[in-house]
Image (tube, rainbow, N blue to C red; front, side, top):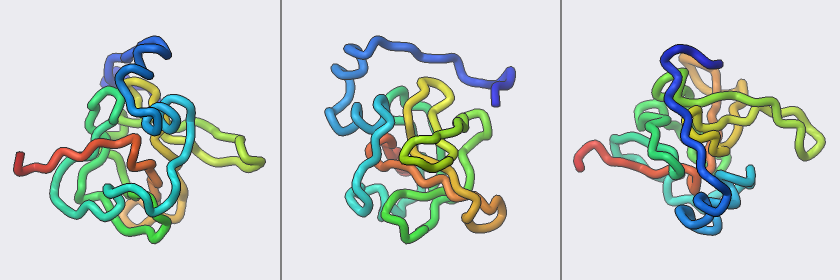
Amino acid sequence: MATQDAPEKIQKSDQEWREQLTPEQYRVARKHGTERAFTSPLNKESRHGTFACVCCGQPLFRSEAKFDSGTGWPSFYQPIEDEAVTDHVDRSLFMRRVETRCARCDAHLGHVFPDGPAPTGLRYCMNGVALQFRPDDQ
């Protein structure tokens, strides 16, 4: 959902993204891949801080909204701001899901499901490799 508060778009060539990101970050964030469950250190990250887009650095989620979903991916019940992410219908793998992307650079972050905790009832199931963690104490 675009609003007047939406962040300014960042656009780079495929080659620029390849040069900036690791091969795994590129595969997941730019080519809509998925990391293996339980492989991201961010899944167990419990410090206070902000989870930002690995591609453009935009703040996406706060640690206060993080919860252990048991799925093997970092999960959040809401983004830091509604305008930080965008939702897109994903019909890959013969199913209908809602893909979540960074609103600033269109990086693929993961998917959102309607089975999360209160207060939103949502589960933003994110690929840890598409995120970078910034602790509050630094």
